[in-house]
Amino acid sequence: MIYNTLSTVIKFVLVAVFVGAVLNEFDISADEVLTDVGFTPQHIMTIFREGIDWALPHFILGALVLIPIWVVIFLLKPPRLGK
Image 1 (cartoon, one colour):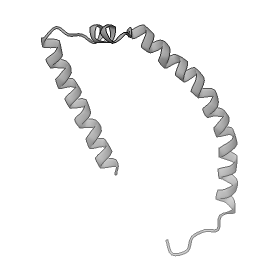
Image 2: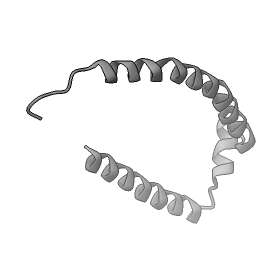
Image 3: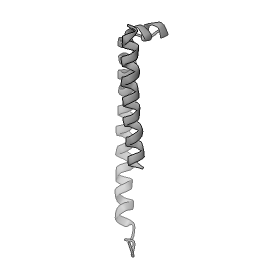
Image 4: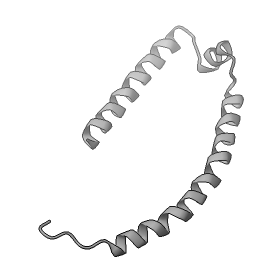
């Protein structure tokens, strides 16, 4: 499972670098492509920061509820025999 995921990530990175190199030879930059689509790098970073600002408090609140529940279930679960 991890091997397949790691293999896929490595293949993606290699192909992305290759495609980026080819596009660079045609004088196409990421800034130009983003501008043509209607985004700027600053706009994307703003969206990313707003997403983190929204998700982080929800993640922490959920963890504060789920971790104690998980600890109680883990402590009360009988041990498995034969494994």
